Length: 613
Image 1: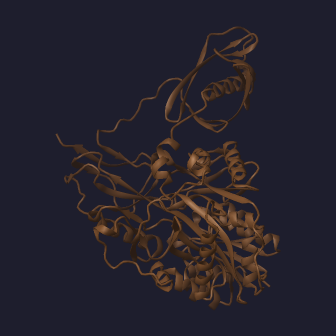
Image 2: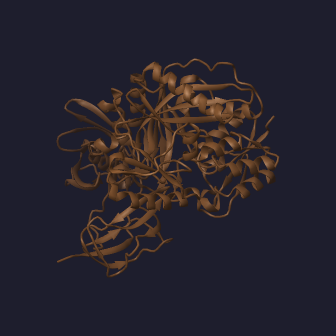
Image 3: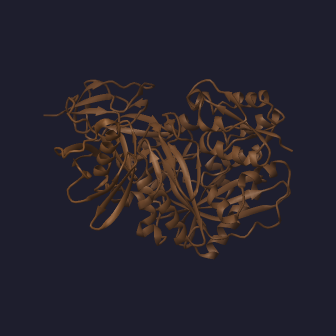
């Protein structure tokens, strides 16, 4: 029996594994980088071990240090979670060689499926050796790893070489392996996968289907189980293929077989030899705990001959600290408040934690389960709409709108959903009374400390930045209290404002953190009464859109070089994503302040392009 498990991971999955382990009476050990010294996953563990450094390559990707940590802490098992070393066969062997229990598939199975090219050969599929114009569009893909890293869609044959070069560089940095391959890109396809679970006694469960079609940058955003509007014959065929893949490599533990589905055709993508981020929707539908089952399988227990029956529908939304309206730019800062009511919330953050630049920007996963798909959609959208997410910009509004979009509610979505609809889904729509409620809450809050007047006063004004636009509101103190034109102020204090608008009482909960104000889901920035002088940059200045690290500068890009509009100049990496900085116009590069390895903050001047006359 396992008595102590080291979780070789961080964030929400480490917290989630710790929760199940605690329920099973198993002691947990967390490892952490210096950047994660006070992270939530360290606070919920029974013991912690430091991995010196901040970058993943120095810490969570150092299998030798993690094995030493497990032995030093007295753990007798290692759970890899997902990402990092979860699909690294050498790490699995090192754990086993150290006399520890590996809560995952055999190293040989990981090795067989770790390379997507080898996995395709195992399934009787071969990536094309050459690409012609007739093959387009194609997808360039890293052979090792996932999460959208090392992936590029190519629609023009002239772009293929550049895509291969960029994908190799990104794959090498992310996975230590620069092998890439090319496969057909199925336009309008759905991303459908099958959860499997296998024991050491020859039983393999196929736990239904999941649809993960709503993706950005090839990373999933909204997932659900079962996959909707899928013919039973096709679902059965996918399940049979998944079981065949598992048996082909003598698989043990939890895994996922992924497909791209178009009509009644299924194109095999890969097998992930680990737990998936979206595993909670399967847990909800089947009424199981996949982590608990992983542990029991690792202990040698046998699964029942048949899995439990599926019940209802479950949907998961990934809440990211990112700005979808600005090329999904990751965000950093203090997460003041995170609360999503009435649904399951898996998170690696607590109120007051800091979101840094080193790791994935996912804050949490919100999961709703209901008897029908329509009810699950309504439940999750409502929970997210009422959620308190106070801190950096997030994709919360995008999630709510996505769940309520006609294509999604009708189950007509595909992997191109955000390419088609991103502009409409990110159109600012702040509450028109949010700024007034913020001003009234602030005025009433200050009146409690001596600012209240029992006489009529001159109109007061406050300015707020809402969704990038400045809003100025006016109010006044009267003998009866606060007043504003067009509405009746029913109640106002520092945390709650009630306005009567056209005979309807509307309640606004208000929270403030310095200059940042939240009125319900609307984020506002309180502006000073007098405008501060601004720092102007010369035309053509390229500023860092997010905090991150310069990973490379394009070949031949030096001061004095001629550049063309849209030409890639350099790449920033932040939170596991690579962001390309391009020339805004044709001209001459007159300044370059970026070099590989340099860490930059938002607004840092990277380069200047002087436009051609």
